[in-house]
Image (spheres, rainbow, N blue to C red):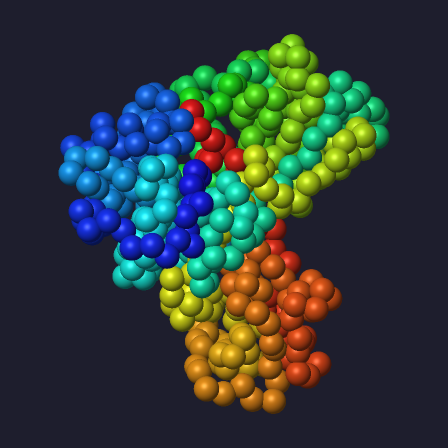
Length: 440
């Protein structure tokens, strides 16, 4: 995501000749490309062309401020769907928010943000994301900074050396004797296998995007990667014929493994893919290789054991992720079934109630057998207190009650309230592959 919000707190009135925000059209594409290059010095013509081929793209999702035929300010709403436990949430990402330098003092970014929030309150996605390159660059009610990237890094030679040690976990002992796993470059007709492995890995997780076949084809066509490797398990059939099955894949870009997924428990596939990626990094003269993956991935330990480091939810390239919930009441409706499932798993009788005090706002959360809702005006005896930022991070899975209480950002009136909060908002591994965010 790319944002220029230096004038977010500007209070000057915009020039009378500048009209109200309007929706973009196909006819604006040339002017939009020129504007983006003037403000951000990107995207490239190829990247812009691929962005309008996005299967979910609609020119009307651009918000423009114009003077005559010149675009003065711009933002784009990009629509996706993300996995969150057993649910799928509609996600909107606010991209390419910027203003021409000569208009920085006229408050145009605020005008565009006001229009974007107005539209999003009407469309009511589950969550809105905004990437800012300088933090803090935006101070608007409800927008909260969260961690985004999870990665480990080490020297590629050190990783290969660690993988060659005998005590590295391997699934070969659990595989049939004639089974063999090798890695090679992916071929396009093997797309269904990549889709299957991705689908099997992200089901029930928190954060990865839903990828339709059309989205997969677009993601591959835009070439925001250097190489894709697949891990292939080879077996001898009854007639002695060799049969192949794809059991994992890795996507690399500029000395980074931006996505690595395998069938459950297939450590040998992960080993082969890591070795290939590390060899590529060495040949390309990268002295450090970086692995992006969920914080629960055991592969991070390989990099740590190889003398590397692990980084959880840190900004990259100075970019901070902000999230916003356009409709918290509806969000509670969406997460209600999961909240109820967590309570039942902990043996808490339903319905249960928990007061929630966010700043001066007093509410009560009621969790029933299959749903939940918020009511205002009462807390009850058992309640929690926190600031708005902590509350939104809890609701979006970027925070957990136990950590918030330990750090003093959340307090509970009773031990019962504290226990219920820990049950309803546990630590989640919220993560999304970097590949979806890369520029071509």
